[in-house]
Image 1 (cartoon, rainbow over the protein chains, first blue to last red):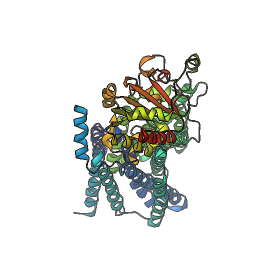
Image 2: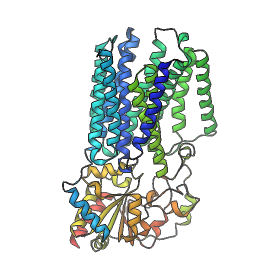
Image 3: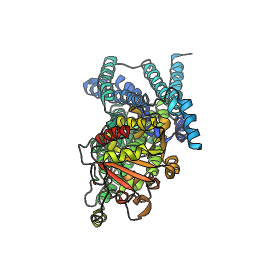
Image 4: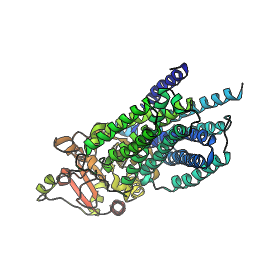
Length: 109
Length: 462
């Protein structure tokens, strides 16, 4: 085992902790957009698809390469577009500040 | 700075974008900007990849991307909000398939002889293949259940768990065999077993639990992508894949907690396959009180505080806009209205929030279960629209019930309860609800949308 793989394992372990921490404070109302958003992020496999397709030789490999690029592109664009569609609907009322304090006083009373 | 270093810096920027994107999703205000930042990071990472030395077949890559965009964008733009969960399952499945294929191609077409690969390198490849394949076929099953191509109920057959265990052991055995002697034949066997296992372990999961399943499979795809990152020596693939893998595991746990069940229970218990019909028959003699829209309209119009508890029935009837109209009509009369949202109302955690947001309901009127429950005793009328299981007191009172232990919206604390339902048919989990027979409950039968619009005019007339 060389130092290269150790460096990748270090990145892996640190990223696992970051992933866990960054998500632990998400309110449940955003769980669906979050699932969809993280779904888009693993579309980064498109990068691997490009590298794989880019070094392919011969009709079989290139055909498979094109398929893998299609699949990964679907993951990326589908993921981000669906998430954006969900989130663009999370609009506050224009006067949300006032309304919020309104409901708070109501709750207090 | 050489081009190689520049590329690594660009990947680092992309990785930071992904982390900030997830961070942004923790607040409704910053969520959209966060998602756009994630997309920006993705564009940077993809664009810079084309500068990698030795990349050929640019036409093939461009063709693949154009086809992907041509299919993906319309599919994502046109899907109905109610069909969102299965869309996420589909996009997750193609991601898993892509990760598995990248690993397979690396293994099969690598110019270096397989025997020269170190054991850990073979493990990276086989992990990507196995986990990506499970995610792919598992997502197809989850999609089919939610799209109702397949029946939503758990599909069971004799000795299901032992068979699944044997398949899982077969996969582990083949992985070990490949690690000792990297053979393409064993690799093919492991691929087939993994594809099979993805189907086998998702079949007994009920449609109501499919969201938890999708979240778990989302996490799997992340891990498979991280594995390809090890294979391709790419930090950004490892970071992005691991972020999704770790957060997906946590999200899966949060979702199953919201249902009051453990992840193994959801995956292995074939929940809901045994409908508790014995309980339903013994209650047949009991009567339910049903009211007219006008009666209920008056009740609503002269209350001080109304809680609307939406469920999937509201979504299928496309009634979220009418629900908002009713809330606004009540608010104009000075009545305090809020929406009590169960974490698993709809088909996914947070799904109901998305549907209501689509109808322009301001998110500060949406209350999560805990704060809704603490206010429920001050509520005059709880209006349950197309929900059933999430308000079923059996979850609190009857230890024998399959949903026992699931936290619920405690509408029975309110002074009066109105159920808008199509019929007395039990909810998605197939469990009878005692609350329907309670004396403070009034039923208004009919399509949720029709009933709500009748209520709007009844309130206006009152």
